Amino acid sequence: MNILITGAAGFIGSHLSKYFVDQGHFVLGLDNLCTGRLKNLDDLKNNSLFQFENIDVSKPLPESIAGLKKWDWVMHFASPASPPKYFAIPIETMLVNAEGTRHLLDLCRKIGAKFFYSSTSEVYGDPLVHPQPESYWGNVNPIGVRSIYDEAKRYAEAMIYSYHREFKVDVRVIRIFNTYGPKMDPEDGRVVTNLMFQALKGEPMTIYGDGKQTRSFQYVSDLVDGIDRLMKSDHCYPVNLGNPSEFTILEFAELVKKIIPTQSELVFQDLPQDDPKQRKPVIALAHKLLGWEPRVSLEAGLRKTLEYFKFHEA
Image (cartoon, rainbow, N blue to C red; front, side, top):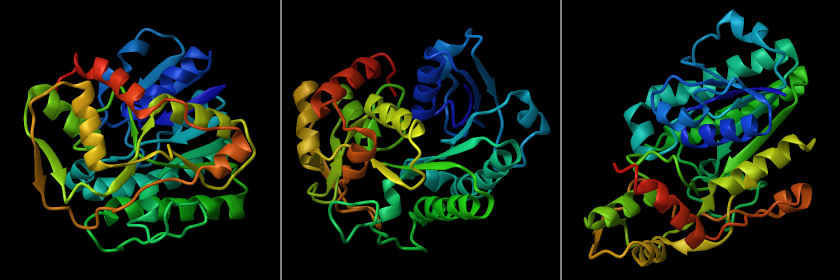
């Protein structure tokens, strides 16, 4: 196949690019590098099945993109995904999910490609339903500080299904729950990188709020497997991809201290505005449709991630 991937220099986009190239597919990776890192693509540098272009898909796409290959898939993974990153560039975050999504859907409509979108568990907001199934509509503050990401993703989903209904564009949408692994940006400000690098450096480990809020952590290879399976299905509506094993932030911090022997103490800071208190996916749909479930335990995944972080310190 010929696959166009936006956000190709990002954490998930770079893993996808490598996965598809290793399977013999041609990948064109697009990224404007506002949060992506070219070093994530070092293992594809000299591969004839991979091509990279520095392009911002929030702006109209170059005409040459449509004719470069007969694209089978257009996969939209371009967006800042951690609060410190999207707080720093709020307008760009909204535009890549709004105008970027529209430009790519127009491309799919024009050339007959299938469209794949990386949505997020953040569409559920600070959920009043726990755990969260795809049928839950969410509890999002539409003007809060996190709305630049939450509402951008919700808007993108609305646009995708408008194109699906109006123009018959064949679409796939995943709602990604917390995902971690090698190639994460050490400075992305999320709980995995924050606590692991603080432990590695022997610095105080920051806990926001009382640490009793919960998260579920999915290793990146499990996510890539779920994406591949959904592409091979004909299901066009949102599917949760995440690990339903739920941990409090305090439990997660203790596991980090187990795999990284450290004298670091826990320090507590105020919980950020609209920070979700609970996060856990219902994955019954993915299991039924795709035969998918996560295979990598949190401890095993963190040990693999640690091996990468040891050589890529922040």
